Length: 112
Image (cartoon, rainbow, N blue to C red; front, side, top):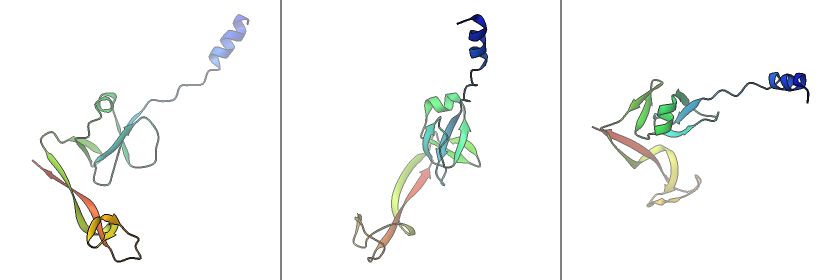
């Protein structure tokens, strides 16, 4: 390899892909996962430090990341017009929509 060939190869290298950090979240603002990939879904761009800590004790509100330091978060199944159809007498049995059913969804409660 001649020096001219070496420099030609070196200058023909493609630019590296940009590095980005993302937090994907659901409609309630609760985090789904932290990633460096471009995936479908709702996300916000975050910095490397936030990505490294990957805290699940956060919420996204108005496109900003909010820490939930002193909040107690509980989740409960509640009857709903939307959600998973279950047997009317047993929430642990998922049934098809053609059978008699009660729909349930997971509700999140946050308290100080």
